[in-house]
Length: 197
Image 1: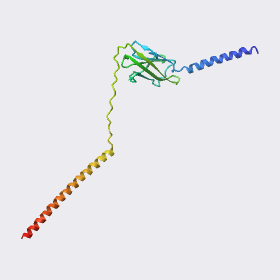
Image 2: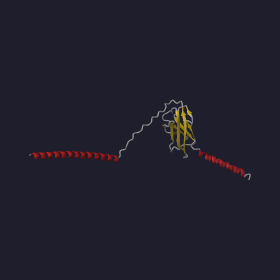
Image 3: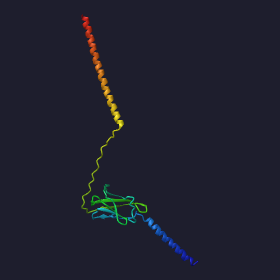
């Protein structure tokens, strides 16, 4: 009985170690990350790129998505992400160059090599930047273009035809009235002339 206790204790310890070894990597997905700039930081050096370092490599067959917005909600155009040799550090260039003063939020969405989708975001503030402030011009509303359909063309043609027919018949009716008047006058004159003889 005394000999069995150490053996049972050793088995328990071994089981605990195995659970830590197996569960540890499984729970260490890329939802945990480090970033440059750091979340909540105030940066006084030029910010020309974003950097995210994950606990495991990124699966590149699923293109990562990264967005950067100013505090006003305007999107900042980013370049294509690149990765270091480990595949776990992602660098994203900022196309306009150095960020001007302001507060920004960067968000990512990736898939880790184990197939686990991960996402996160970081908010930081830029101060003492030499870059010109961002100027956002609101997009002009595009004019509404009505598509011309065959039905519309048929309707237009029918309307034009109806209008033309109405003009023709109206003209003929007016001509008939004038002609009738002329014939009546001629007949009246002939009767008068015949009576005077």
